[in-house]
Length: 350
Image (cartoon, rainbow, N blue to C red; front, side, top):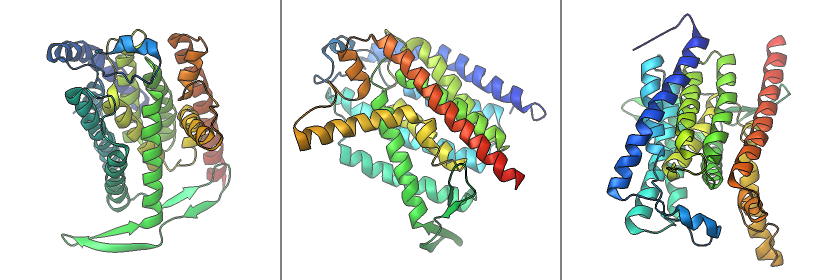
């Protein structure tokens, strides 16, 4: 294992670069393999019509991202329980996405897993991740209100059971919060992954913010994972930017959504995720608003949901939407990080 314990900033930078290079090298190989096996994207016919030309483009590129993150983390970091919890969330959610992608490719259906099945699997993963984090990584079952000294305890009600003489505590309210955060984030990142390069770029920005937060908390293990995810996403973006040679698929979008969610949980910035992942909140609300408006008032508030498709229908190019959404994502992430820094500084001064 390579360690640079006396130079943590260099260690984080090296991690990002190494992940970028590995992803950039492996992705073309993965593209060739996918093409040889005839594994390509099945485009939904109810989406923008010009997207139908993307049918057959290699997908499941998230496989490269996930394994690159794991390899780089093991090479550059001292393995910790919180780091393993982060990988658990990354691969657990990624596995759900992989199953979804596999069903789409094998059955040539754009819908994949049913929504109910996804939610059930996400519930199982959230429970497992939450229990491991609380019982083995000493994660506090509290939530801090940003810009205040208020902390909301969510450790009770709880019950206990034993596994091989190890008492396992199940804080019901906090595990419920973990489920809500993970499900909301994974599915909204998945919604965002509707244009070439959009999800990869916004994930990089969110990971940059969480790398800063983890570093500020002296959690080098988590900062390295953030750097690995960000670097891998940038390396993948070389092939995923418009016009994309490969899509990350649900393997990537659900996996990356899972790691964003778990970073909010492990760094105890659960509420700030609404800002740091603000672009995902906008994408998710656009879909909810469209559904509610049509069902209740028989009117659509957008030409097409999620909102990035609305701007496509307005005549914006994919590149325009991608770049502008990146900028918006950067603004939200910057505000979120700024609020965290002010909260942490205020708390430390007391």
